[in-house]
Image (cartoon, rainbow, N blue to C red):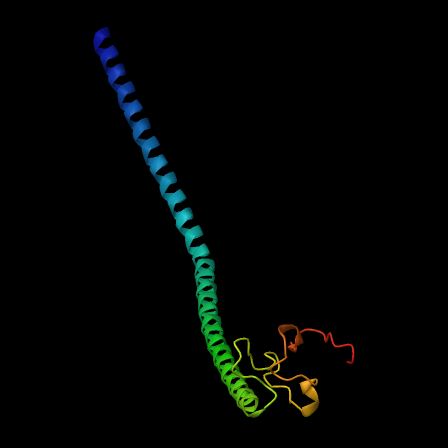
Length: 157
């Protein structure tokens, strides 16, 4: 009979251990559910700030696109202005070449001929009879040519 009681006690202990393990598992599951709910709650709380950050990022992208379009428009305007300047400069140079062709003091057929225009102002300096410096095209040398960007080497000036 002692063996029956020992078997009953062993079975009772095993049942108690099983119940303890089962309750422990349920308690752990409940803790895990609670922890998961806390994580979901935190995520929902952060969702608003994530949406705000996403909205700010999209606004920044749109602003960058707007500025890029504005820069492209300004670049196109600058190119039109450059083209206009080049056209005006070409017109002035054509006028100077025509004046040089008419002027008997200018050898416009010379290999080193270049019309005297200033690239920065876009206008040609007017030529007068006093600008000839008493030289004729036949005896003019490379050193006698006037470069508007260089200081004058003529001691009379």
